[in-house]
Each structure stands twice: as structure tokens, then as C-alpha cells.
Amino acid sequence: MAGEEMVRVAVDQELCIGAGVCELLEPEVFELDNDIVISSVTGDGLLPRARADVVVDRCPSRAIAIVEEEL
Amino acid sequence: MAPPSAAAVDTPNVTDPSLYLEGIPHDRFAQIRATPGLAWHPYEDGGFWAVTRHAEVRHVSRNPELFSSAIGHTNLWDLEADALEARRSLIDTDAPDHTRLRRLVAGAFTPKNIRRWEETVRAITGELLDEFVAQGGGDWVDMVAAPLPIQVILTMLGVPTDDADYLVELSNYLVEGTGDAQSIPPDAFGNTTELRLLPFNSPASHALFEYGEGMRQQRQNDLRDDLVSHLVQAESEDERMSRNEYRNMFHLLVFAGNETTRTAISHGGMALAAFPDEWGRVLADPGLIDSAAEEILRWATPVMHMRRTATTDTELAGTSISEGDKVVMWYASANRDEAVFEDPFRFDVSRANSDHFAFGGGGPHLCLGAFLARLEVTVLLEEMAKRSIRLEQTSEPVRARSNFVHGVLSVGMQPAGGTN
Ligand code: HEM
Ligand code: SF4
Image 1 (cartoon, protein in one colour):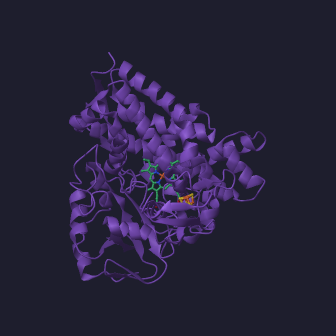
Image 2 (spheres, chains in turn brown, cyan):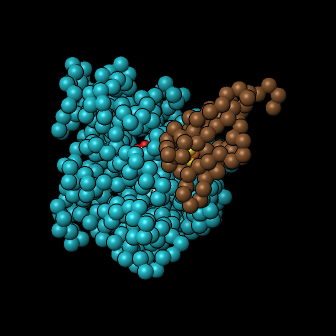
Image 3 (spheres, chains in turn purple, green):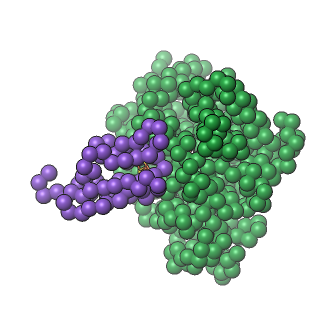
């Protein structure tokens, strides 16, 4: 969207406990592997900053971080 | 152990289990919330820091490296080292053990995979409600609140639902074990283990362990597409969990999977009966069902606290905490924090703020079953709305004598203007 700041997110797979909150909130960006139950970013991992802030905050194990700002 | 400060003297007691026979002592929690800093609360073997405000519960929950789940115990009282080892479950671990164990079960409970149980939950719920209406009501706990979650978790585990009544009975004895009065003798269910080595110090835990062991042996030679088979496989083939971890995981899933959701549904029914106008709003606008379900969870707060232990000297709300101090997060209080929830003592089915701590304050121990419990409560409301069931309370609730589970043992309800 015009004027909306995009950021890139990443999952720390050591920290992820597979709660799936990320996939629920942003199914286009996060996907849980069904066998190992660890989340990873699909595609380019871009989200508007406000929505990225929400998933970062909601992930129970602080496994999601914003890795590149202001793209 | 921290030096009891001068302020400690005035901290109102919130741990006496008999207080809870009359409901959560909200006035006492309000007094503690309003006192700056953290309150030191005396307890049997010393005391604990009572964390009662939303912001600080959140901080403790989300900083597991400062506040451990593996030291001492996650209940108020400390366990001796051998008892803690014998009883240790997912809930009493820190990373990396926690991460390993949690991943063994996490897959079954992700929002995406939980959605696949919706039709099962709906069928069970519909049957229970139809029976409740056909009978003209009765004990809401017995007829709806208890059978719904136990049947669902047993189906997921692969345990025969014929055994639901027996497992609910065991679970009732476990709740007693969180209070100060057990009604069964130490050797009940053929138990010969020292009680201090059993979860909730209850002989019913022995029976639940035995039941889980029986399931393990059955599934070992007959793996199926169920949760017990999945655990058995992790235990026997891959050695990703020990035998002791298996039995404690089975125990935790059965207990946590039924007791808590049943408590939410018990209080939910009571709230819908006590505030018929609020339920009327939901009947008029089913779009309110999701927020009504969240409000029921906040209102019920089935698990009233969890405890952590400080791993280092730290500070919270301007109060110094010493390494080894017990820190108790009172969800029952945080969910009525007036700084976060507008008019917190009002039951409001359209409350916009759903940031309640019924499932804990976030952090890695966030309730594994949160999406399952939400599904159960939501489907219940949908099916009640579909049948236009309005509840009338016909008797006072009998509450559990526990400062840990906000349990309701029985409460009479009847449908007014039901299907007929
Ligand atoms: C309304 C219903 C429920 C409530 C209020 C509830 C509440 C809680 C709370 C407060 C915690 C501790 C969170 C923390 O320490 O941060 C917890 C943990 C847990 N709950 Fe639930 N729960 C509910 C339903 C369920 C269900 C249906 C299951 C199904 C299996 C379940 C399984 C668990 C497990 C396994 C844990 C331990 C998680 C861990 O330590 O990683 N709960 N729950
Ligand atoms: S929300 Fe966090 S812990 Fe849960 S699956 Fe996503 S990254 Fe993993």
C-alpha cells in the first residue's frame, strides 16, 4: 500500500515452540512445518510495520524478529 | 529467601483455600494491586512476591530466563528434589527441556490443526445440549461443562470415551489435592507410592499414571493416528522423551485438557444466567460470539495463578527481588486490573480488549490448549444460540476449596424458552 512502511521478519528456529500464532495471524508469511512443528518464513517475509509489530509481540517465545527495516 | 519488608505485614491473605469457597477474594486483590511495588505475601515455608497487576504478570511470563519454571515448583509450595524430578512435567521445565517436550505435542494444538476438530466438538456439544434441554436442565457441570472437554481431549488422545466418567472422577480428586483437604485415603486406587512423589500429592495421580501406562502398552504394538501413539513413538523409538516424561505428559494433558475448560464453561453458564441482557445481545448479533467467548475466559480465569522462581537478583515495579525468591503471577487479579480493562467487574460480551491472561501472560508456557479451549467455548455459544437456549440458575454453585483452580463442583441450571 502506498506510503506504508514494509519490514522483513525472520523466525529464530531454536526459540520457536510451534504455537502457531504467527501462522494464524499472517498465513501468507509464516508456515509451520507439520512434522518438526517449527515455523519458517515463506516467500520474502515482508509485512507492514504495524502488523509485524503485532506478530513479534504475540509470539509467545519471542522467536520472531524484524531483521530489516524500512524497505 | 527475601526479607519480609515492613509492608508485608499488611498484605491481605489470598492463599487460604477456604476463602475461595465464596469465590475469588477480589477486594483483597484490589487492595494489593493498589499498593505500589510488589507485596510480600507470607506462606507456609517463607513467602512469595505477589504479582497482581497486568503489566507485571506480563513481564514475569515473558522473561523465563529471569523467572524459572524448573526451580522449586510452579505451585506455591516447594518440592523436595526427588519429588520434583518424579513429578516434573512440561509445565515445570525451562528451555532446552521445555522446547524439546513442547515440540512433541505442539503440532496437535496449532490453530490450523485444532480447526480440524471443529465438527467433532460441534457433534459432542449438540448432543449434550439436546439432552440438557430434554431433561429440563439439571447440574450444568455434570451435564455440559465436564463432559464436553473430557470427551474432546480423550478423542484426541485416542482414549475410549467410555472411560470419561472415571477420568473426570480422578480429575476431581486432583483438584482437591490443590486445597488442604483430601477426601480419599493415601492408599486409594491401590496406591503404594509416597504421596509427596505424586502430582497434587494425590493418590488419584497414581491411578492416572497407571491408566496412561495401560494406554502406552496398548499402543506400543498398535500405533494409530492419535496423540498417545504419537507420544509412545517419541518415547520408544526416537527416545525424544523418557518414560517418566511420558507419564507426566499424559497426566498433564488429561488434567489440563478437561479441568480448566470445564471451569470456563461452568462460570460461562453462570455469567450468561446472571447477565441475561448480555446473552440477549449475543442472540441478537451472533457476530459477538468471539468477543463473548474471550470475555467468558477473562471472567472465569480457571487457573488463578502460576509461580516462578527468580534465577538472579532482579527488580520489578521498583521492588528488589533476590535470586531464589518465589514470584507468583495472579491471573485472577491481572484479569480485573482497572488499568487495562475498563470497568473490569462488568461482564461485557462486546469488550474490545481481549488481552486477558486466562491462558497465562504469554511466554513459552502459554497454554498449549488455548486454541482448543477457545474452539470449545465458541462452539458451545454457537450451538446454544442456534437452539435459543437461555439459562436460568436454579441453585447456588458449590465451589472448589482451592486457591489454584477456580473450580465449580456443581450448579443447577434450567433452559428458559428452549427449543420447545
Ligand atoms: C479454558 C481452558 C484453559 C485454561 C484457562 C488454561 C490455562 C492455562 C494456564 C494459565 C497455563 C500456564 C501458562 C503459563 O504458565 O504461562 C496453561 C498451560 C498449559 N495448558 Fe492450559 N488451559 C486451558 C485449557 C487447556 C487445554 C484444553 C489443554 C489441552 C491439552 C491444556 C493444556 C495445557 C498444557 C499442556 C500446559 C503447559 C504448557 C507449557 O508449560 O508449555 N490447557 N494452561
Ligand atoms: S508464534 Fe512464535 S513460537 Fe509460535 S510458531 Fe510462530 S514463531 Fe514459533
